[in-house]
Length: 225
Ligand code: AMP
Image (cartoon, rainbow, N blue to C red; front, side, top):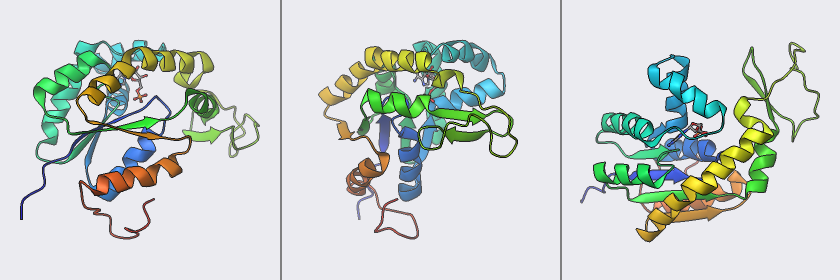
């Protein structure tokens, strides 16, 4: 039997569109390696590496990291994924990054989460955290008490969840990342999934990926969650 080609996929969508949740489900069902540029940057920031210190100043202002820094960081990581199926999340975010990636490897699938900006603004600005424990609260769904249930301490908003920063991130997406969708659309690789709820979009993504990879999750294979 012929061995299916390795999946070389990218997941795209505005910040807050559910990329993290969908990626986790793809990993669970299809066993792919996942590489998130945001996670990689946060890891570098936590370890206070040279890249991490530089990245923080951009991220705190809702700006993208310069292409040459991002491309070098990601291409380096991609090499370590080797002969696995993989999914890139958050990269490429500009056409320059997509072109640099194209020189190194052949992408075959681009999953686009097409979620309206208004839905995203409500989602992101409603997220508050308790800094000491990392507990996350969604004030859209729970009453806006503004304090941590367990300690009674005040909740704070992550700098990049503040309304003005969210608007900047969405503007940056519009200006710099939409052309990347066009770039992949022209190559015939773009598969868009539209909706306002991740749980409603997911079954369509699952069905699409099932045409490419077997479901390797042990149970509930018939009920994609
Ligand atoms: P994310 O968690 O994917 O929303 O990423 C958090 C922040 O990291 C973004 O708002 C950007 O400032 C930065 N970032 C992540 N990926 C990239 C990328 N491919 N190019 C430039 N900046 C990025």
